[in-house]
Length: 304
Image 1 (cartoon, one colour):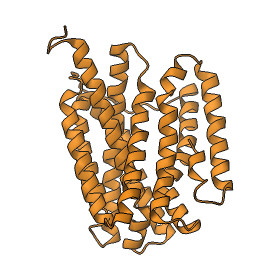
Image 2 (image 1 turned 60 degrees about the horizontal axis):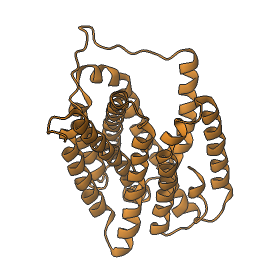
Image 3 (image 1 turned 135 degrees about the vertical axis):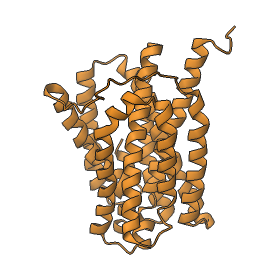
Image 4 (image 1 turned 180 degrees about the vertical axis):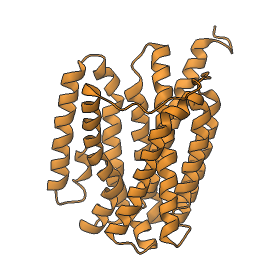
């Protein structure tokens, strides 16, 4: 019978805690993503100014990623995750509170930096859990991110017709997600980190790793377009109501969650190279279909 200090019980708790953290990350992303039209209207932005605000988040992510190795060499994910979660919650929850464009840029920059460190930390934890358990779990963890995105988008789709304002939704959703992140943190792994005196420097990828990085970056161009622009595209270009536009984001996240939850099973049975090729072809076909279908009920669900 397992005891309170049983390693297997501790590992199971860490797995569930990490699933919760991935869910929080995805739901936060969706909570911001479904309100792109509201943010555009609130600050009276054109597409160029809105794109610059999104670029601020990307710039924050790049800055944080350049330091992520150094941070995680000194601090375990259990320490990094709650702090970054709180910064994400504060930034996303405040998106519609200021009236100045400069404040929006600052919030997006802060969110980008915190979200990047949060993401690296939970993936670091996922790698450690896979190593300790000896099981394929990574795809399932990322499935929780997509499930969080689906739930976050679907929540706004349900609440908007009920009269909930965008500001109320941002504040309420981020409060719940922040509480979930903090509640899950004590069950994460207790990892000891002792960085060398010089710290962990930046290591640039080379050879096959560089090629994989380029491929991942190209994939994220399409994924990022869905996350950042799909709701606005459905609302502004295809004339979809708010609830349908949000469900477009939710359908994309749901399709991605389905693929990721089955990913560990496939990964255990299919060699990496053919799996990578098949996934790339499927993603490309999804992008083509999403752009070719002129009806809001058809576009986003093809991208998974």
